Length: 428
Image (spheres, rainbow, N blue to C red):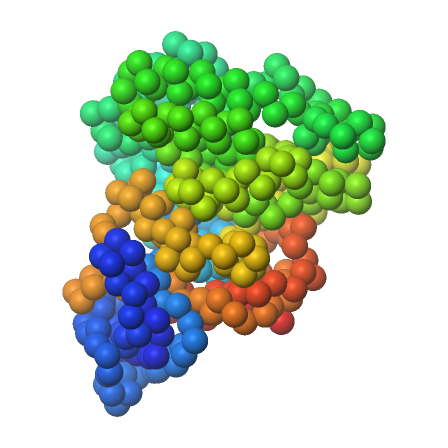
C-alpha cells in the first residue's frame, strides 16, 4: 500500500528541517520526500494543507495497566489511544501486577504490544524488586530485553543508598533513572496541593517540599555518581530551579512536565471533581507559570502525559478515596497547542522538540526520522483547528479526564507508524 502525505509543513528539528514537502510511504517505509509528488504514485492521498508533519511523538511516561489492571486499560487499547493522540512510541511504567521487574514480564509486555500493532511500547523496568525499595531489580537482564530506563514510579527510590546503586548500575547501559519525586512521609492521606485551596476546602494537602526534597537528594547523589537522572512529572518552581542549576553545572539531569500541570492549578479542586486529583497534585498558579517559563527557557526537556486510566468507580466516588491520575494520550496535543502555542507564543519547533525530538533522544531513537529509507514514524497535526474534547471518540478504555467539553485550538490529524496509518479524532 502506498500513501502520500501532501502539502504539509515538515518540521524535524533534529536535522534542521522546516519546509513544505510531500512524503510518499510504501509498505511502511518513506520512499520519497520532495517539493512535489504526483498523486498518481499513491493508492491513498492525505492532503494535510495547513498542518504540521513531525517525527512521531514519544511519550516518556504512561501507564498501560497490563498485566494486572486490564479493567482500566490494556496494551492494545492504550497503544491505540496513543496513536489517536499522535504518539508513535510510549514508555510504559512498571507499576503493573506483577511488577515489571524482570525480563519475563518485559518480554510479555513487548509481545502483547507487537501483537496489538499500534504505537511501539518502550518498557521502563522497576528500580527495585516489586518496587519495594529493598534491593535492585534485575536491571541488566531487563536491558537486554529492551527497557529504556528504570523507575519505581508511584514511589520514589526509597533511600539515598539505593539511588546511588541504581545510578551507578545504569551508567554502563547509558539509561536514566526516572524518578517519581515524592517524600511519602509528607503526603500520607493527602489528596491535593497544600496551600490556600486545601485550607479553604478542608482537604489534607501535599506540600511542595515533598517533591523538592527528593529532587534535591537525587541531584546531589547524581552529581557524586556522575550518572543520568531524569525527573518525572516535575511540578514545582523550586524543583525546576534545582534542575536548572544542575544543568548549568553540566550535570546529566533531564526532566519532563505534564500537560495538566501546565494548564491547570489547584483552584480547580473547588469543584470537588475527582478528575483533578493526581500525583503530583495540581500546584498553585505561581508554580504553574514557572513551569511555562521552564518550557520557554529550555530547562524542561519533554512533555509527557502520565496517562493514568482508571475504572469509573475509582473516580466516581468521594474525593478522599479517589484514585490519583487522569488519562492523557488523547488530550495532550490540543492542551499543549492551545496553551503554549496560541496563548504563550511557544514556537512549533519548540513543541516538536518537547513532544518528539527530545524524548526520542532520551530513549535512544534515531535522529532524523523523517528521511527517505526510514520506517514511517510521523505525526500530523493542525495547530489552528478548534476542537471540543469529546471522550466518546477516545480509544482508551477509561474516561477520567478533566478536559471533557473544553474547546481547544489545535489537534492531531494523522499518525503513521510503519504500515499503520491512524486517522485521529479526539473531539468535534
